[in-house]
Length: 102
Image 1: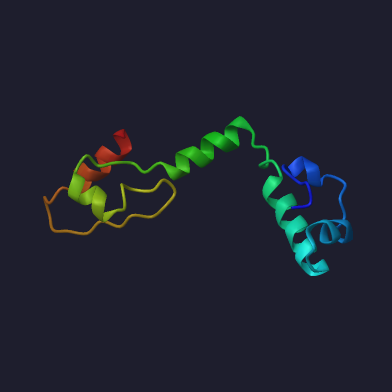
Image 2 (image 1 turned 120 degrees about the vertical axis):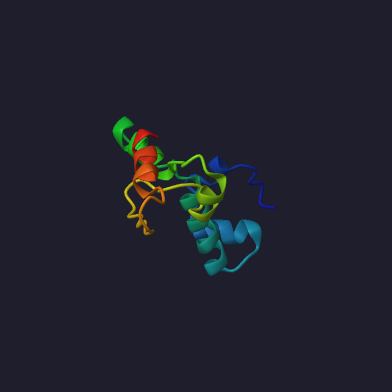
């Protein structure tokens, strides 16, 4: 309705004009324009270092033990604290060394 086919068609259109063209109430037109402008905005720019850090933080470190990785939600999260407890010779140090290598 109203002849609007793309987001660019709404460029320069104010809420009263949109309300009249679409035959809706003013608050509805204002909310529509606000949502379209918010959703059509380009994503914020990141530096290469910021993008790499975000990717690194989102990528879990796997232990190569499927059951343990499943318990950890895919692996250990960089920057998060992971507490290991167990008796002597149960593999705590070996697991930590594996995480460091990965």
